Amino acid sequence: MLKQFIIAVVLFTSALAVAQEGTTSPYSFFGVGSTKFKGTVENRTMGGMSVYADSIHLNLQNPASISGLRRVNYSIAGSHKFNSLKTSEDSQNATTTNLDYLAIGIPMGKFGASFGLVPITTSGYDIENENNGVNTNFTGSGGLNKVFLALGYQVTPDLSIGLDTNYNFGNIENIATSTQEGIELGSQEINRSTIFGFSFSLGAMYKTMVTEELQFMSSATYTPETNFTSENVRVIASILQLPSGAITPRDIREIPVSDSDFTFPSQTTVGAGIGKPKKWFVGAEFTSQKTSNFTNRSFELPNVTFENAAKYRIGGFYIPNYNGYGDYFKRVVYRAGIRFEESGINVNNEAINEFGISFGVGLPLGRAFSNMNLGFEFGKRGTQNSGLVEETFFNTFISLSLNDKWFEKRLFD
View (cartoon, rainbow, N blue to C red):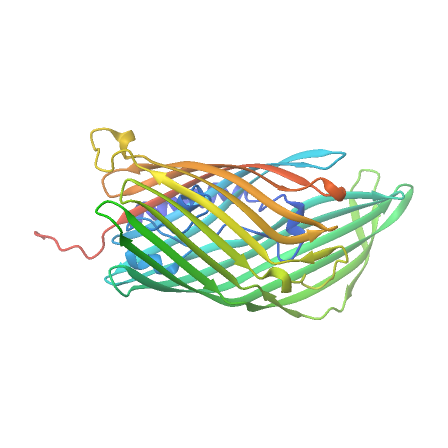
């Protein structure tokens, strides 16, 4: 199974690397970029809800869930996004393809461990603004990633706790290029930031049978606020715009700008749900993030403020017959969910909120409890009020969740 997983990783990442573009959202300019969903496709297709966990799937949102793994799990996922951006005067379409996570979970009796790589923010936009004959083009790229190591411990058959430690790193570049018709020379300003820092999260999960068939689950996670370091570079230059449209920098100067520390906000998530094991489950979850103390890295924006963010999620799944080996489709897991998110970004006195509806299926692979997960999501973000941009997006997800059994005793050598 490990060999198959390595082959899948190489093929999957090679295909995604060709198309990797991050995001096309203009709102990824603010802070350290747009926050990416940091869970699995299985959770994402249930509205992003993380309160549910079982013994054959990784749950990247709550480290306590890892103690419940009973097989070694290899997980990898990618997504493709179609994004339609509209203002009151114009519209544009764009697509992006991303690698969403790469992780391995290992059961160790009452303990469980997992490690891997997950993108946590992304910045990518290309916006033009014309004012009094001056045309300014704003572009951005980059984002933050994290390498994580998570440990879970089963305190009792019903209660588990966990710790998730992360090293966060990445680069973000913002470029503003201004030109004026009839004038050969223009100007360009480039801001680059190399960002790094450590963070950690604490988690707990509780489950109990409330009747002979119904099981209650609840979960909680907490991430304290963390100081990240941003090493900043600013370059300005005069540019020569050729008739072909190409731009040649001239008189390049590096402007001294101080490195900075900024606080990545704390976050608390609580959730609960009920269901019949291996049959169905429905739950709800709430996340509060203290983004009101967040700032941009090396420059201030007079029309932008940060408020506390909140996320509301409802979702669940249904399995017709978990043991129905005579009928493949009865073993398929059907998932669906809905979410509403207050991003905490306020531009021109307009709150930037996001709404999404998701659904998906888990398709069994072989007899080792492995599966391929497909998901879809439709949603909206932002507004056309006050000259802002409204995004309508359609996401598709795919993941492999492969299970293996290590240290298995053989009857015969």
